[in-house]
Image (cartoon, rainbow, N blue to C red; front, side, top):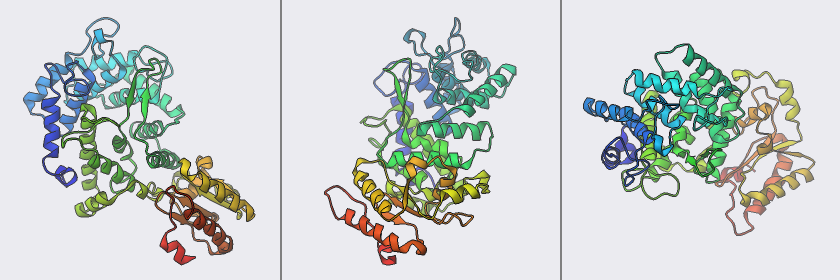
Length: 461
């Protein structure tokens, strides 16, 4: 498999030309998109890293671009070692980290790289985190991601860098992740850098969070600098694959959907843009190409059939993203269930677990289902309210199944835009029919789009 199989003829070369020619200015690459003559250490570093990863730089180009990138380094003052434009006040931990990653990709283990890393260590906060500008006490896991990658990849480790890495990983380990991006970044850092065995329920929780975001037409997280409310960075949705590829396969429905987004969002046959933009941007184009590159690499790694994967890619829709493919082992205790008593208690015979999207159009569904379940002497448990429960996760991990210990045989109703699926449990068929009848009634009323009951389910009932 190659780029042509995924994107079509000439797109890859057009995108490379867009980065190397359209975005090139006198020193490095332009900020954000062609037409802007503003110097940018960040854009220059991102494009160099992408071109090097994609093996699209000759030795002469590498030397030239390396020198141009190093010219962004501040040589004196409090910012000594950092990368950016001093007069524009755009020196950040991100720009410096991106420059260091690009130099590392170019195999330039020199004083320039060392000085950049020393500045990152210098501006690390006492709690182990980093701020965006390297000045404030406002730390976020998003600001720590690139500095930690730099420290992890650095080949000339010393006491200062080791201490900074240890402190940073401790910060991430204790960090309370709330957004989808934070959850996935935390897992990536701890599994890839910290080499820490993560409770699989955290992986599942992050994947469920991303799936739910996609189903509600989420286009990507915004990383906002709390010290400057006018500044924010879009996190490009398809680039999530670069983070989740550590624990899901390339033919997973979520992986395929993210690559499909790239196929469908190509602009003018040569680049990609942030949400709601109509012209290609340099950083999104770079991320898109790197994402596809590693997806193709992973398909080859797992020896997947090119034709089968491409066929799946052509037909994948967001409604096809299912929880059962997000995780392939029980999320409890590293795959070994040690919570039998807890599960037995949580999965009482009178409980029904409901997984309903957050969209307002499903509010009527939620109300009617809850009332119907209660009328039949049963207790509704909302998955979105209980998702952090490890005992509940044992059930959710493969969508509809009996617990590995055979104690969780509760009904589970899942509603998506495409269909309603109900777990099969003959012992509870008498009230199952009542509830499904109520769902059938719901699908036949109202003017808004409603889920439909699958033909297979109707046949079974």
